[in-house]
Image 1 (cartoon, rainbow, N blue to C red):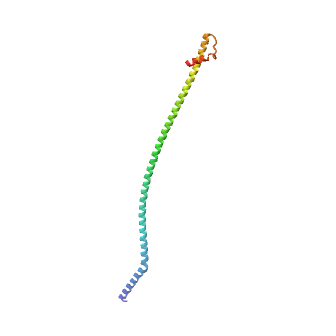
Image 2: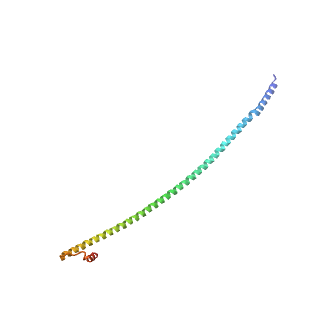
Image 3: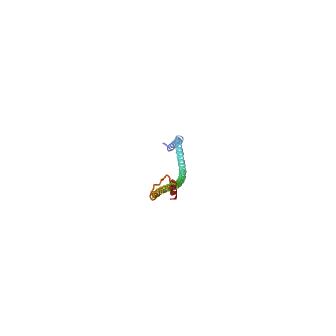
Length: 156
């Protein structure tokens, strides 16, 4: 065997192998690598979008939280203000009711005093008539002297 023929055979076999790999093996490998590269790029882009959306969502959540806190503070302030108004209204109502009760009590006291005075006048008038009857030693007709008794009552 000749070394040149072996070398030429090996060279031809090598080029045939390279051509076979370039035509049949290399394209599917390159397609798989391209698809993998595209998939990785899409995944990285989606990760960046997700990260950006997460930042936006956290900013929106912080804004919503701030807004909610301010609304809560406003509602609490309104509730406290309304509570103070209710207390003031209740105080006013209680004071008016107390004043009304005082006026009613004073009126009742005045009525009782008037009744007591009238009763006292009647008692004094009866005592005066009884005293006059005893002094005169005769009986006095109360119906006949009604005008006299009324005058005495008014004087007392």
